Length: 191
Length: 367
Image (tube, each protein chain N blue to C red):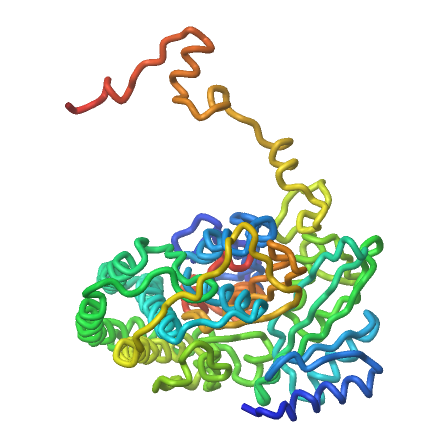
């Protein structure tokens, strides 16, 4: 492990100078660069083809609702240098469109399909079933910060009769309907 | 004569599928032309739920991402929180954590023995290994109070110290399991059926493995030495003596050979940890969890599980709840894009055999 972060600074400076990007060495083996959304494919291809960052570790999205932006993160790894490079970009939350990059790593297809479904981000040209996890979903994309899970649960699910409180269901039903509920536990007891 | 192309659906309820997911196959005769993975039967919105809980409350969710491997999830998340906050972990806690991780690997290997042999039609070994797994679960029960889900590793260390008699019981269990492994391996690796079924089946090409996103034993089964415990040592792995086994071939057989040796390494690590564990504090107590805020920032921590790398990308906005927690499990690539490529040209009967060897855990895909 390099203590002086030579390799980390080398990849950072290369990307900074080639793409006029911002970035930091976070710590040993962790480098982040911030690029414009139309530069992401160039940076990923540069890192993959020329610097040996051939492993896509993962890709994810963070909803910065207060700033009206989604942050997309592509984490790629160089197996030789053991350095993980985060390529980060921000896109408009009201018009969330991002370039489809599954031609660079096929496994990005799954991540993009998931982001399309969970955050409502469009990736023009993305091939794959529209539904990845969710079926027949007509609410706002559920991983967005403004999706209210409690409200959704209240609207979608309902209490079965007799379960409105924490009391014994048989007792509540008896009180409500006046009908005596058989005590099956006693009736079928072996004792 | 051209055979008719048929579509087959395996799962979501099928004994050969390693959880609730469906593999849609296009076949001619018994040969798979193409496949695609369909998930959505198990989505519990874990990542969303974590965003709505404080930094400690998430632990009841974390361990439930993947039933066979609850502990790597706890450790990976705890390390992410510690890194964001800059919280130190006592040395003794680091040793205990490594011991828990290796015990967790051990019990997961036992399940792998059952799944891998069972999907080849060899049921006796599965009965043995799942039975013996209970001895490891006994240790977990003694240590944490829980058999499968533990919620034992927390930010700042672990929740309890080792109970009295735990070390002796663990060493005794390791001795027993080590002897049993010889019988397991004779039963599995000397079996002609297993050899014929595993060799040359489910091949991942060595030159494509890293680019495809393959991690863990499947990558080592391609002859590539890669293990987070070595590549990016965490806790006290850099103070322990163990090897990372590899095998050539990239097929099910190679992956099985890698795991066969890894189990012995886990036992060796547990013995070393118990021998070297220092006395002292085991928990750097966190403040009142209901008022505990974590400085803004983003980190990615990763841990080696039996199925490969498990990583947590955690973002904090400085509040008492995580802003975003993204869970990256090995199955996310192994169970979807890698599986699609590997299944092409294989026999229908080998689907569950291949799924088991790739360590596909569907809840990790949906989260």
